[in-house]
Length: 170
Image (tube, rainbow, N blue to C red):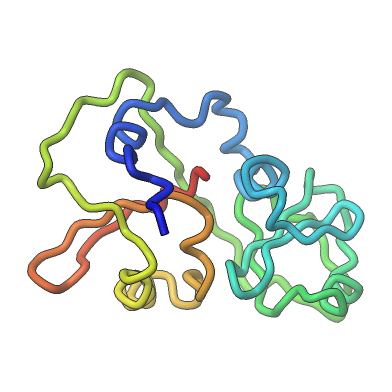
């Protein structure tokens, strides 16, 4: 099978993303209605990734009372994580376990070229290593099909994957 990211290093180092910084205000909603639309499962104003891809769910704005029970019946797995916009309330048989803030950074100018040792394109053969690394800081976020979300670059120290930025921009 041909590598769909054959020229991925130049793609990753020269492209400014996101074009519209407001997409970061509700990143899961933007991704699930944009580049990951064909992967998304939708029930009215609630949208999510299949459980084999990621545990993330999204609403367009905080005033939505999501029908999580119906979504659960349509394949939403628990636990589910809202990243960005979180509903102000959830149905009474669901609970918000915690709320926290995230920072998302992106370059505002041209990205400098890097040398060949800056990283490697990660593929299907790297998925076990990717899952092991994410289990350290973000248990349960990386799933069997998460690698389908886009291009991932990684840095190895010897046989061990030590870093990979989450750059799912398919």
